[in-house]
Image 1 (cartoon, helix red, strand yellow):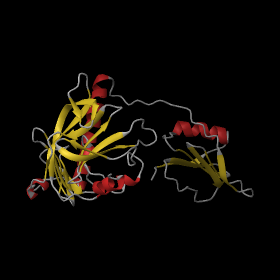
Image 2: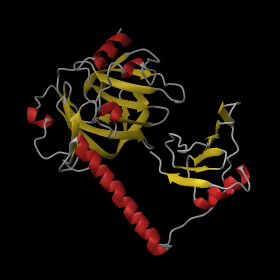
Image 3: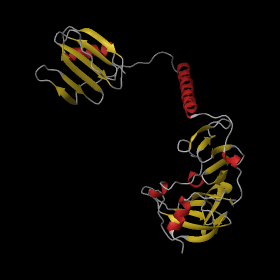
Image 4: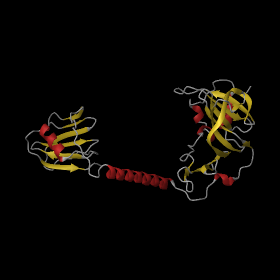
Length: 326
């Protein structure tokens, strides 16, 4: 009898035998379309658009069924065509990975992935059956905490490629519908010589796209609602939740809450400015140098004046400055 260790070894060993075929999602359907061999009570049909897959060792090519490229890797470098079909983003394989449909089946899991608990432990015996015209091992994998149903997988015995997975209770999965195992795969399938976006160029593209979306949205609001600045005064509670620094001799202190900072020091000739990252105000009274800031908002002169009247009512104020955040 085949053990789970044999199956796991096949799944974590890079296969030397090439594979190509069309992957389709499947789901339970009444009446039945076709059955998973060896489990005739679970009847499923292919649904949705599939993808064509070529795999040889660490190399992978994924296309839509209409021939549009989705993803290529030569084992060291990868090209992602999901943003631009003619100019993919490129990078090392650990930075650009396949995140498309049926990732569990199309992208081989690493040995490290099989060390966790996300469908990595057998929930029953390994069986040998025919699946998609191939002799396969099949075994049910136990779900991790938080997921209700186990997952059945089918692994080609000759090559070690996974050919299908299916949640029998959930009624969904994916499979190779026409796998070809062992046919030569041309090296050119796993490389791209055309124009690309480097990681830096791709990041710049994303920033430009975000900026364009923000401009369009702001323009819509200005045209549809109002183009005038919108400001509203809200109360800010400077009552401290903590006073981590207190000097009993001078009366200096540093106080803060989750949103505010408030400090004072004895007045000096040159004044005092704290090294705060947030935008803040400083000012002086005859006895003290003061500083105040709101972490997630912007104080203005009127708000500072109200705070000053609560801290030291009636005292003259000088050397008031607004200091930009760092």
